[in-house]
Every structure is written in structure tokens, then in C-alpha cells.
Amino acid sequence: MQPKVLLKELLRTRLIECGWRDQLKVQCKEVVREKGLENVTVDDLVTVITPKGRALVPDSVKKELLQRIKTFLAQQTNL
Image 1: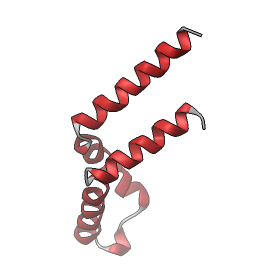
Image 2: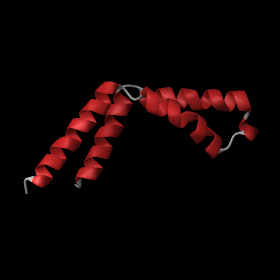
Image 3: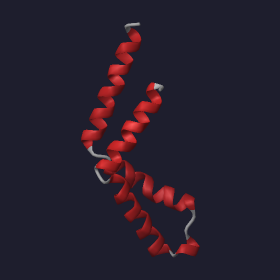
């Protein structure tokens, strides 16, 4: 499996484990409830949820991914 795919899977797993995904679902439901189902587009949700989603990623997940990326890059330069 490619390192990019492995990092995506790791990120996905960590975000699910920490409840990030569930938090975003709640945020999306709130936006739909406020605006009404008929008045919300996917673009509206992306615009509102993206900054919240980024802010909700735990520092521990960011640090772990950064470390994995650094390790991968170090291995590539040593080849």
C-alpha cells in the first residue's frame, strides 16, 4: 500500500476514534436545522463546517500525522 493511502487511513481512523466525525455530523445537523433542509446546499455545509472541522482536529492527531510524515520523508531522503 502507498504511504499516502496509509496516512489517509491512519487519519480517518484517528478522527473516528476521537469522535471528530460524530461532532461534525452534529454540526451539519445544526446547520440544516437552522437554515431548513430545502435551503441548504452542499456548498453551504462545506463553507460552514470546514473551519469548524479543522479546529476540532485534536492536537494529538495532528502531531502523530506530522511525525509520520517526517519519518516518511526522512526515509525517502536516505534511499
